[in-house]
Length: 315
Image (cartoon, rainbow, N blue to C red):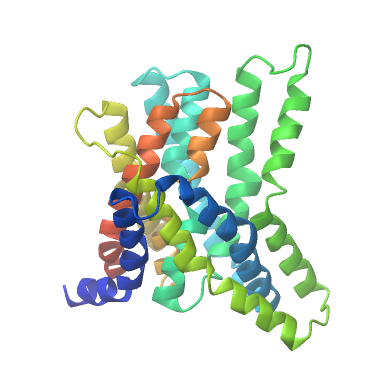
């Protein structure tokens, strides 16, 4: 219990930044529509600045631990198989609906939640980077391929291949991903970067955590959250995301790959993060149950925040 309380105290700044955003939106101090401005600042400037500087300065050999990455991939594949089976044969979801459920239950909010939480708990968000790249370069690409191949083209006569390449290209060229590419490339090439430039990146990156959390709070505060009347699909997807997925990570990492120490905590906590913000964007873009996607983003964010101290203590 003392470990749970200690972790909860470390996460107090997360609750403050996030909670004030919720209260401000509810009280109309700052309109929830303004969350997009704060989100854009964090996503396009502050978070890339943090990632670029950190990846350049990190020990990539330690950061990209092959055993840890293999354990997370195994966990993700197992989770995706379970979710796809339930979605297809129990919920009778469409192909696109199944892909959306896989994304909701097996991908995580790295930028807006994981980075701030890791900075507060461990003083460094570097362990998130391999999972971030795996999620964008592999898991998101799989979802895009399914979404594009299962539906009618936006432009008549456009081939599936063209649509998939367009979607994958967009996913792989976001500011966050480009910052990861740049940081890794500069690190591997031993590019000399002056101290003032690294200090500038660090100064800007320090704003990423509070601004991202405040933006998330603003967005959720204006979303009109309701727990009653939720569908069965919502309940099992939320439960899987915030409870089953991190439990799978704990079991696979500890008992299959024999991972102990900090990496066990890193991987379990990453898996315990809420569903990604772009779940709703994908649902809107492909016209696949956007209301379900919005509800899952909101509810997993709140549920994950409540359970993080417990997962941190267990791992």
